[in-house]
Image (cartoon, rainbow, N blue to C red; front, top):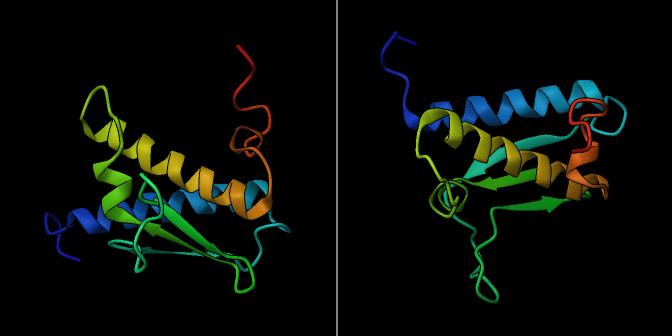
Length: 115
């Protein structure tokens, strides 16, 4: 790719894939064969007052992350590249935690000590 021609979609995809790669290193057997894809919006209407930021297909081990809800509904106190990245990473952590049936804070053992 030509330098300077990286799109916003490429940035989101890179953040998602690098976060999933990090988690796969932490949980290699549990996340073997898991893939993540990015879609704009969920294909089915939201139930209730929230729009999902991801969906899980446990049988096929696929996480689908929805870019627009993930970005637009993030309540950032500072809207800068670092905070946007953290919001996307947090969504990936939450989706992986749902897939594994665990708490997102437990996905990076020793990384986040209790306060």
